[in-house]
Amino acid sequence: MRNFVAGLLVLGLTLGLAACEPAPAPDEAGDAAAAAEIAAAALDVLITDEWANRLVENPAFASSMGVTDYNGKLPMVAAEDHARRLLQDEAFLARLEAIARTSLGEENQLNYDLLGFVLRDRVARASWKPWRVPFSSDSGFHTWLTRMADSMPFRTAADYENYISRLGAIPAYFEQNIANMRQGLADGFTMPRAILGGLVPTMSAQVKDSAGDSAFFKPFLDFPETMSEETRERLARAGRAVIEQAVMPAYGALHEFFMSEYIPGARQTLGAYDLPDGESYYRYLVRYFTTLDMTPEEVHELGLSEVARIRAEMEAIIRDVGFKGSFADFLQFLRTDPRFYAKTPDDLLREAAFIAKKIDGQLPAFFGRLPRMPYGVEPVPASIAPNYTTGRYLSAPEGGRRGGLYWVNTYALDKRPLYVLPSLTLHEAVPGHHLQISLAREMEGVPDFRRVLYPNAFGEGWGLYAEKLGLEMGMYDDPYANFGRLTYEMWRAGRLVVDTGIHAMGWTRQQAVDLFVRNSALSIHNINTEVDRYISWPGQALSYKMGELTILRLRAKAEAALGEDFDIRGFHDAVLAAGGIPMGILEARIDTWIMAQIEG
Image 1 (spheres, rainbow, N blue to C red):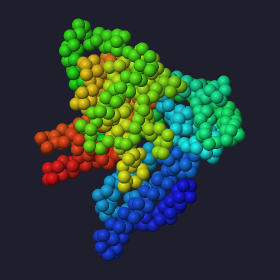
Image 2: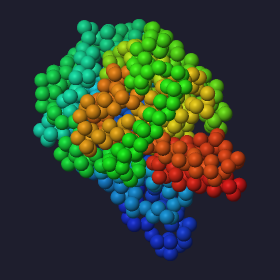
Image 3: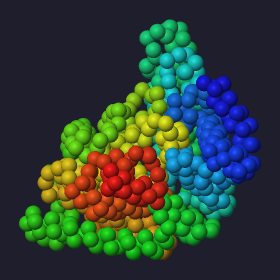
Image 4: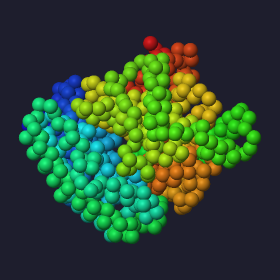
């Protein structure tokens, strides 16, 4: 595999030089067909080149894609590495723009547009050097490492030696990230100090009394039966040594840096507007995460209108159940009544798994295509759970030993109400992230980069749309679960208000917390965790509601145009057919699908 990938890179770089030359006009090439062939060949070479380079530059990503050539390495993330990647991306983009798009066929035009979406974002975002803040409020460069073994094979001694080598690379990887964060401190480009406390345990938790207690030691507890005892002992000794002498000291040094330098030196403001050139940075992030041309002010106003609409639907449910008291009283009832909470972590996981299987049985009525990849239900790891979100989906690594994972946070059970579990499951598992991402991974005849492309407005918008689809699937079987659905929708509508409020309008953290406390049944713990997330990740929180509203609008358009001929399975298949795509491209594709149904 190593020689194959390296060969692709060399071939791509060689042929790519030719691709930089302007394509001949049709009359020079002979005819339009020849021009199309030239353009398609240049695009194919570029796509191959960019993908091979992506694997070389990010060994961990390569592992997740089933490419084992670089399993002994970690990414290089020093300032000069980011500068080198920017030059590479600018060269890739120049080559793309030298290709005559109009000469390409329909599918290649889509490939052209999607690669352009990726490259233009990388080039544009690089000007703000976001690598100076390599983490969010609950995770970052140091947390994914505890799960890196999931995407690596452990069949031979060489596989274990690669893993040991990758563990040994952690100190240098951390040193590069610390240097980047020091640059951020010097430049005033840091994470807000107010939200950093919750991240500290994710560092200190990896410093154990012995290597055997470390999550990194797990592969050394399960050797292949065919491996000799002598080899097992040798590899286990080496693993123990590298964890104790390299990995845990690196986490200890990171923790010390964070406590003694980063937190004291971090900025005391909250919003992205307060960063150097922060206004233009945030306005760019709004456009990127929504894939729509909207200003923060327009998003804010839309959010306020959605909050008002959802609040009215919530109040209608309160009247319907005959509750005597105010809206605030009802929220307090939901937050405190024991009937709405699991007694043990296993109870919560079992309920999530039951709901997931119940949804599975409904999927054929709503989708013509279903993924082959299975998924499981697991708790959020204890080391990150206290400051982690309620649930999350992790896609299956290529050629790995597990399917997709629907993570459920079992920390602080009295803050994890059961009435929101149907919405969470619909979003994170099926028909939300697992179904959408797995179908994208299983696409045939498309470039590899498209299988992993995830425009946030599409992916998160689909997840929120899946929550509402649960109404048609019969997943909200009592008014409290439906109120939970509206609570989750309010959560996403509130994000439009809160994210823009914090990052563009000078909102305080308390203003953001108060909006969710007043308008949703989310637990106070969850609200605090989520607000910290929005502060740490400007713009991303906008993608959910903006994407969902676009999908709902396109569905309404299709239903109006097709009437009784509207097929919900066909519509969903059309939405998901091309994998993750920007919303403008999705709209054009759905318009084409509608016309095909009318004509056909």
